[in-house]
Length: 164
View 1: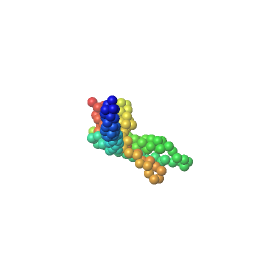
View 2: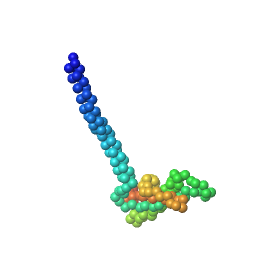
View 3: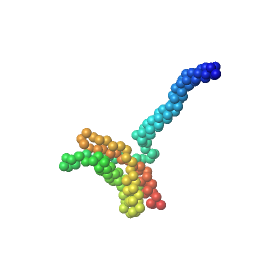
View 4: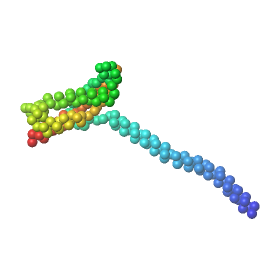
């Protein structure tokens, strides 16, 4: 009986000492995948942010225009930034529309085709409304500058489809 107790005590002591080291390494190995997953998710998030910041322009001939809007209204009160950015986008889109209307297509201008065909007019205006937002800058003199761009090849394609 004493031999059994002594053997169990010896086995118990060896179990206590050995599994503790094993348990410590087991903890670090079990936490390593979680830490690795966290690092991978941070890397993926950084790559996504970098890809958003580095927008590549699709191929084609692009026209960019800037619009400006004041962050302070005529009475000296601050405007909401969203409103100021929307006003600057509107101004940039107006400039883009005026440019596209003056583009020559054979012997006419795009604006002539827009006046003749309501479908062309609607599609060109839709193209201008979907102009790509290329950047926003907040200037020191309380103005916001928005840069917008449109693919001119798309406008020519719309006019070309209407002539067929």
